[in-house]
Length: 112
Length: 114
Picture 1 (cartoon, chains in turn purple, blue):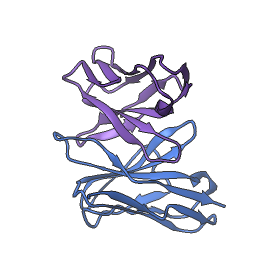
Picture 2 (cartoon, rainbow over the protein chains, first blue to last red):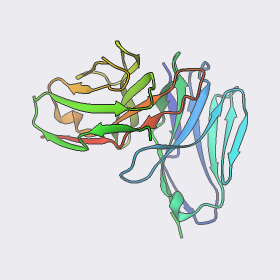
Picture 3 (tube, each protein chain N blue to C red):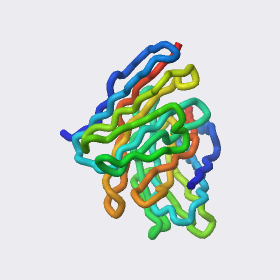
Picture 4 (cartoon, rainbow over the protein chains, first blue to last red):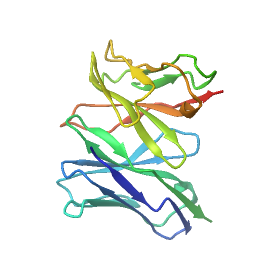
């Protein structure tokens, strides 16, 4: 089955700096890679996703890149703000029906 | 609006008791999933279902069971609750493969086994 590794487990940045979170996956058949943000006490919510036929996707201050050959993908947040503080999870779609396997999460802290 | 809801939001139970957590979605999604979230482990898949009468084991299925008698509901049962099953449980649903496979999560159920 699929295995997803996520680094770092914690990340602290100053407001306005960029943050990068990296994930690797094991199953070359995986074709969908979403990123979820989970604020304290809340449910995980999708912030951006990328499919295997695309190398990069941007949405305002958030971008995701995918390297299929190396089997890794990354989340980039620019101009970070305190409200970006949360736990971020990467995931990879595994199996014939889009079954998601998650990384262990990265706790991002943005200091004012 | 379509949504996915879990109940109860909080539950305290004793070791050895049977417990059922409910999950109900109104999106008419075929795929439904149960995850548990523990510090340092992220979200781990317990069971999943691709449709009515279909259920499959995930990576941490021991001690849990599910049933899918209709599209909307996937209840999770702990046959004999153990302290190791103290966790936050999230239900999720998604559309079929080939379409948007974004998973939508419920609000979570915090279960404490004493």
